[in-house]
Image 1 (cartoon, rainbow, N blue to C red):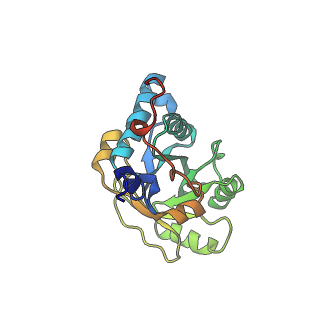
Image 2: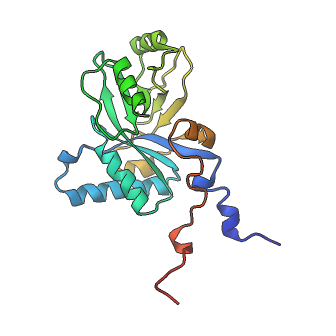
Length: 226
């Protein structure tokens, strides 16, 4: 007996996949830069829609020095039952100039910390840290931290907007990102990381069964109809 088209499709598309499309660096301005809240909400919704159009499964929403926008986006995706995981994050510049993306926190990271202190702050709260824009000096810092629990969890080796491939003398999980700053850019830029589901679970980006039983709205029973 042939399987229904949806039972086949759900095994190979979106969050049912074993290999997920991940873009951990999509930037949204801090809330205070928007003219009003409705414009902010519209901007976030457009970005989430663009992520789905682009076939993404996991998206990291970054704002400068605060995870608040990412938390709003995460809440919106859950409330609208989107087939998309939003990981809230913030950009962070350490005391010595290292640039980090810090995810999964409910509060901003205190200013002017060293990279060791910032990573410890994040890890103590089950956060996930990606170091970006790695140059010679940052490589030296990472080499010194190698084996420490306060080493960043991963590295961004390529960002479409800033360009430049980054190579490391040590091994860390690697991400490439769009660096998109708008919904239109996110639709236009076809740059993302292919990440095994088991690794996404190990990094704490998703739960083990996330999206496995997802049913799109158009296939859900309409309680208002007979």
